[in-house]
Image (cartoon, rainbow, N blue to C red):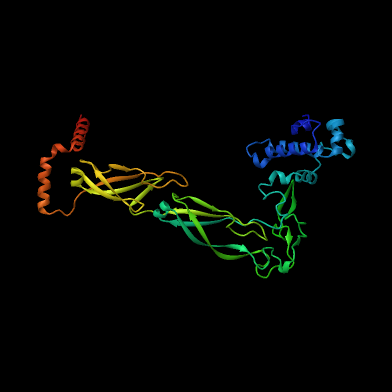
Amino acid sequence: MAKRDYYELLGISKGASADEIKKAYRTKAKELHPDRNADNPNAEAQFKEINEAYDVLKDADKKAAYDRYGHAAFENGMGGGGHPGGGFRGHGDFASAFSDVFDDLFGDMMGGRGGGRSRASRGNDLRYNLRISLEDAYNGLQKSIRVPTSVSCDGCNGTGAEGGSEPVTCPTCSGMGKVRAQQGFFTVERTCPTCSGMGQTIKNPCKTCHGAGRVEKERSLSVNIPAGVETGTRIRLAGEGEAGMRGGPSGDLYIFIEVQEHEIFEREGMNLFCRVPVSMVDAALGGDVEVPTLDGGRSRVRIPEGSQSGRQMRLRGKGMPALRGAGSGDMFIELAVETPVKLTSRQKELLKEFQELSEENNPNTSKFFSAVKGFWDSMKG
């Protein structure tokens, strides 16, 4: 089968510049790499085709020969040292061509291009779990916390070197922070074992931090918790995380809020729910009940005559405040009609007499048992 045109394979014109050729190859390599196309049986063959094309077009002499003679330039020794097989010259040469764009293709997986060239590295982010009460979430608070973390070493000002000396370029990786090893078709990049990816080594490490540029220490921080926070709220304190290595920038500290359950109130978003027990008599005759609010106040709520368990009354604006916003939620009073216990003989007599006199005053009961009777009759039929 005839070979496809190299320019067509990469999706470029003959007049493309070296940068355009490299960019086109990088795009195609990402698209067709076998590791990213496990379900495409032709991916490996297509990947080899674009590498063959790039191996020719990235070289000015071979490109000129290809532009003049086409694929024939690399057959039967033509093209100034061309090799049989259409320019795909074996494992070593393929690996060399592929490594030219290795950083661009896989930099996001390997920690970024040339990531070890700088001796400084950013410190890790830290997480602190903070439990607060529902009252604190309602009012907001200023709280002092103690965070175990790494801070910049005072002995060497974070450089890791003793006496003001400077780190030197790592002899193993020449300051790259990474070393490469060829494995078959691929060039594998790993963190340099000598400098641990820093790109530099310290001949005279600081006696306090042993060359790390930072030491372990517990710090006290004052944290502002805004009103309206709820479980899962995350507060970011920039630069308050772990100190960077050898003078690098500090990470961030994230405060994760957990609001404890309350004995009286239940929270749903910005709304509060308070379940209030009322006597059977108050539910039947109606009356007033005094309920607490989360701000420490009291509200008097009117119980309508004939109220049932589960009935709710709304107190507008008595819920949780909006987080960093205006307004507040509502508070809902839910009635729980309480059945009396440990009745005396006289109380039982009165209740039985009351029941005999109130058969017509329980519409839901009559409706339910009427439906049950109809159900049983239909089952018999």
